Image (tube, rainbow, N blue to C red; front, side):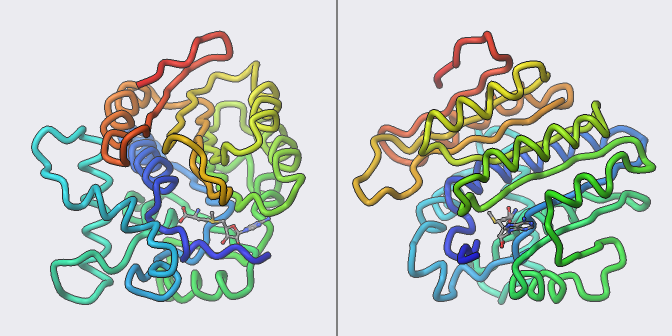
Length: 286
Ligand code: SAM
C-alpha cells in the first residue's frame, strides 16, 4: 500500500474522473428522491497543490493547472461546473490568493453536491490517508468516513434504504489482481442493486486486462469514457485511462461527448478522448 493520491491529485486522470463525477452527481440529485453515495476508495479528501508531493510530479500543473487558466467562454457546461466546484473548495479551504492551492478529491466533490437527506459513505483503507480523510470531515455529520476495504463495503451497504445509489470505485491498481477483485465487486454490487449507477476508474496500460474487464460488463448498460495523452513514454508513466459508468443517467452521455474532446484538446498534441456506449459500438474518437 504505497500509493498516495497527493502525488497525482488534479492530473489528467482526475480531470476525467472528477468532471464525470460532478456531472453524475448533478444529474442524480436533480430527481426529487434521496441518494446514497459510496466512495469505495476515497483517498485523503483534499490535496495541497503547493505541497511536496504535488510539486514532485508536476502532474497537477499539467492537468488542472491547464484548465484553470482557460477562459470560461465557450467552455462545455460540465467542465465549467467542475472547475467551479474546484474553485469553490479552494476558496473555502485554501489560503487566500489567486493561485489554486487546494484541490478537492472525490469525497469533497460528493459532499458539495449532497442535499439534506442524502447519505454518503467514504471508505479508505490506508491508515494515514484515512486519518486525513477523517480530519477533512471532522464534525461534518453528513459524511461517514470509515477506514475499511471499499470492496467489502459494496457488499455490506447495497442495497441501500434509498434504493438509489452512486458508487464510485477508484482503486490505485497497485495489486496485480486488481481487475479481478474489481470484477468480483461490481458483479456483487449489481446483484444487490441492478439499477445502481457504478462509476469505475481504470488505467490503460495492460490492454488485455482492460478488454477482459470490459467483457465482464458485456451485458450491462454502460458508457465508457477514455482519455489518452498520446504516445507512451519509456518510463512507463500512466498516459491513458478510462471511466466506465454503468447505468448512466439520462443526458450524461451528451455532456461527456461535449466535455472530453475539449479537455483532451488542452492536454497537449496527440491527446484524445473517446466515448462509447455499448459493447458493439465502435469507439467514437474525438
Ligand atoms: N477517489 C479519490 C479521488 O478521486 O480523490 C482518489 C483515490 S486513490 C486513486 C485510491 C485510494 O484507494 C488510495 O488512497 C488507497 O490508499 C486506497 N485504497 C487502496 N485499496 C483500498 C481498498 N481495498 N479499500 C479502500 N481504499 C483502498
